[in-house]
Length: 258
Ligand SMILES: NC(=O)c1ccc[n+]([C@@H]2O[C@H](COP(=O)([O-])OP(=O)(O)OC[C@H]3O[C@@H](n4cnc5c(N)ncnc54)[C@H](OP(=O)(O)O)[C@@H]3O)[C@@H](O)[C@H]2O)c1
Image (tube, rainbow, N blue to C red; front, side, top):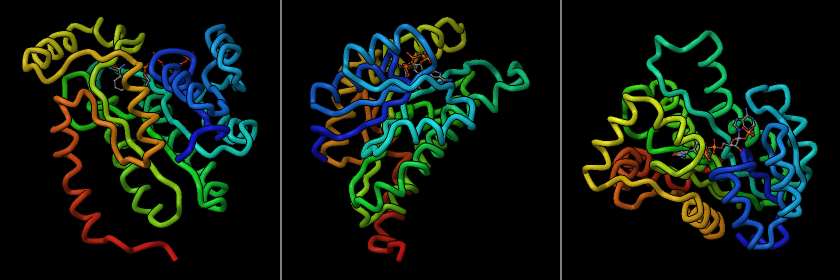
C-alpha cells in the first residue's frame, strides 16, 4: 500500500516503538494522527511530525469512539500502545487484569472494529498490531501480558481470514526485546532478568533498537505482509505457533464473507 498522503493512526506514539513507527511513516509522507495519554512528549512528537495529536487514556473503553471520530478518515491503523504487567498472577491487583486486557487486546480490537467499515467501503486499508514473542512463548511473570499478546496475535490472524478479498490487510508484529521504557521496567523484575539472561545465552535473542522494528513494520504495511518476526534468529517460535493457522488458512482458502 502506498503511504504518501495516507492518513494513519498510531497509538502509543509518544515514545518507544510507536514514536519510531510514526517517524518512519512521516518519512514516507503519511499524514499522521498520534494517540497517547496527555504529555509534553506527545505534543512535541506532534509538532515535530506535523501530526494531529489526540490525548486519550486507551484503558478507558469509553474514549475509543471519540478517538476514531476525531481522527477522521483513516486508511491505516497501527495498534501499538501497550503496557507490561510482569508479576505472578497472585500479585496482580483488582483492576490489573482489566487494564492490561483492555489496553493490549480489547482496545486494538475495538479500534479496528470502528475503523473497518470506512476501509471496507473504500476497499483500501491496513491494520497493523504490535504484539510480542511473549504471545508465543511462556515465561514466569507473563501470565497476563503473554495472554494479552497471544490474544492480539490470534485476533490478527482470524481478522485476516475475515478480510480475504476485501482490499484491507492485517499485519501482526511479533517481536522480542526492544530497548524502551517498557523494557527497562520489565528488566527491573528479577525473575524476568534471569529468564532473559538464559534466552540471550542461546544466541537467538538480543535487544533490538526501535528503529529497525519500525522500518520492518512500515515495509510490511506497504507490501501487505502478514508478519513481522524479529529478531530473525528467534523467528522459529512465532512461525511454529502460526503453523496450525497457516494450514487451516490453506484448507479454507477462497472462503469469503458474501
Ligand atoms: N519493548 C519491548 O521489549 C517490546 C517487546 C515486544 C512487544 N512490545 C510492544 O510494543 C508496544 C510498544 O512498547 P514500547 O516498548 O515502545 O513501550 P513504551 O516505551 O512504554 O511506550 C508505550 C506507548 O504506549 C502509550 N501508552 C501506554 N499506556 C497508555 C494508555 N493507557 N493510553 C494511551 N497510550 C498509552 C505510551 O504513552 P503514555 O504512557 O504517555 O500514554 C507510549 O506512547 C507495546 O504494545 C508493547 O507491548 C514491546
